[in-house]
Image 1 (tube, one colour):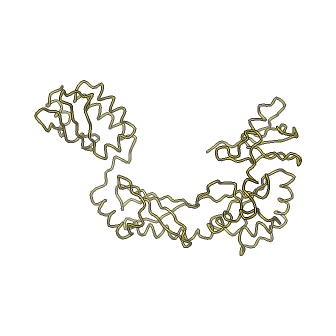
Image 2 (cartoon, rainbow, N blue to C red; image 1 turned 90 degrees about the vertical axis):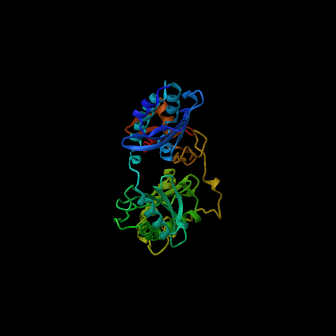
Image 3 (cartoon, helix red, strand yellow; image 1 turned 60 degrees about the vertical axis):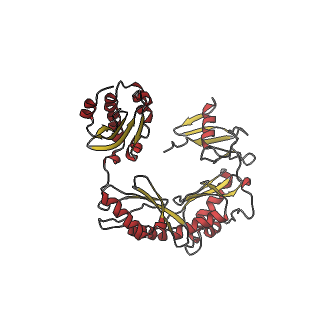
Length: 373
């Protein structure tokens, strides 16, 4: 075992606590930062069976590096060489966690507590072990529950925090060095109230129709794919700022079914009344009644893909349909594309593949599936 003087030279604030020199306590210094560490050696002073007790900052920093530290304990010849290698691991970990380079001053914590007392502790859902990330709850005018995630900087409140929430618009929060969490929370409430009409539109669609996609919509989702009939649906994208206006719409299904609906949509577009609900307007311009949970089972619209025999392929559902009225078999875009591409008789032009329906052999085309972002 290396003598104590060598260890003191390498880490002057990591010292033995007993005369047997089996317990060392103090700090290791890396990049001008001190980390509290205790090393407990067995009576034979073998590093292989040593135990390390780290401060919470070290534990956080060494996440993902624990196996390397254990390996170094197993293979280091003495405590001095282990400390040297331990410091190297810490330097690598610090480079991978640039946010750990700045420890907030004591006044940061007192400021945070004062702000939370003003805001109300009942608004706090979560705070991480570093007191940097907070999740604050908020209710909009219709009592919908929302969460505002706030990531504070080390120089809070001089530096503006990062804010995120499940909303369909950019979350631009005004911040000055005099701002507080209470003011931030109040701004968030104003954002929520400005989106109340948008969520009312989507809530009505979710409640009164069969929504095929997304399967579990979030408050940030603006799109709904609504079932019209078997293998026929409409995808609407509601504008969060103008939710009562005619949404961007796209009809999906066999062409012989979709074409009459598309013609009605184009012909009746002038009838759109911003004073009425989006759902009521859609039914008027399409001259249909949407199937609802009160009148239909969702299984009526959840027809499996004719190639993989599954309804949901990851997040995708069958959206390609054979245009032959006697067939009308639906397929996932990815399944049909791969199927047709494998057939010698198929041909491709740019991103479109032309081939035959796997079920009825009638002509069918599919575009190459867009790459996942």
